[in-house]
Length: 545
Image 1 (cartoon, rainbow, N blue to C red):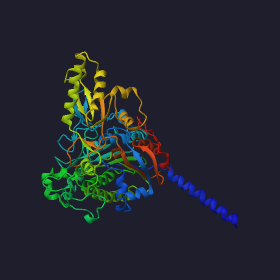
Image 2: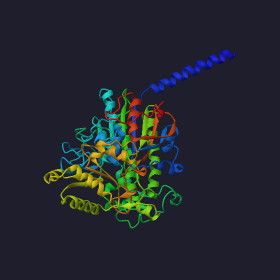
Image 3: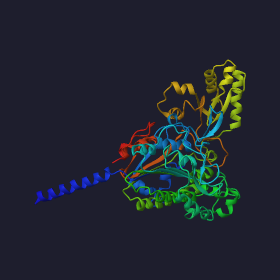
Image 4: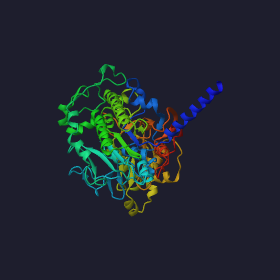
């Protein structure tokens, strides 16, 4: 009898393992890459007890979470983050070195996705003159398209143009962003399409942006329960135009006229809800996840960034935004279950950068923090060149903590550009807000293997970056005293969540240190395709079944 029971048990386990293996070997019908703009890792832990079961906590419980994931380059800006997530490499390879940067060939400042070769599709404005032309490596979705002989669909969407365009790379079937200021429409570029699909035109004709902006933003729960945040009325937050204090409630209907009308949706939690609305419409309209091929959708939530900049890390507004986003994610995940199927999709959730506490708030707590005066800094640099080289015409541009030399002027004076750069690097650290400085030549000839200098090196692109690169003190910003920002290589800007969930993903977590560039090769491995062609990250084996 025991032998019969043992035999039956073995047969049961055999077929169970076969079934499980069959499920694991089945590729997802849809991959969803979610980026939450300016989300610090500690927003997962700080508000954990207030999140519901179906949003963040669902994917944390049933997916694989990296608790010590970081950006490994400088600068930590939106465009650079989105490019690095989906290419699996850093700016020294993919070429997106900031949101805006000085082009030393064109002799002008440029925007990462501007491209006058293309036109807006959706209206007659200029917001669609965009393309991924400045992204020099492939993305995961590019490689998926190549692996499937251009079958399947890859689509990106976000309120921000750069956050829709860069993730889906060069071969996308579409990228859509929100034209708030002019037309209250989702648009695209002629780089992708000649006309808007009917489902996008229908969404624009029936969109809910106006309804969302006729609501009042009050806290989701009793404001007295927001104990993880500063008091609601404080001096560290930037007010909306027309409002005397940065306090709740915020009567959006009354404030929209003084705050860019439809542009205001970017700066309220409803902007995230609106993004989910469009993501659902995209999946239905394009029938994603319905064929024999794997589709890829990138969704970037931008309102978290606009709200973070205005109110800061410790604001009631920030806490309330994440509590509401948690509900939006629950709604989106439930939709994916129904529309695509619970075992038919894989998703990952991460952020393009984090953020520093408002420096003025840190200073009020006697924590070292600083504000840097850009005009004073430029004056200081010109005094250096005057003192050592008898000229104030040796500098072409100063931006993104980089100095671009005027090489023609340097040559005309018989000077050596490397000597000028080295002297600037030596002297600029005497400015009271600059902590470290290094020349481009040093970054080309020295290998920094770890620490913040390694991050600077990973962000340095020999073709596009400046001649002297600088690092300010921690918690230093060039901006007004209210609100906050990001961009550094310090942990407050680099530590972000990475969560994998769904088809092919284990349940668990890891405290090992991983880099943002490890997402792309991991997803590529799961899909059994080539990694993007510039990939320098590694496969996170412990996250995969």
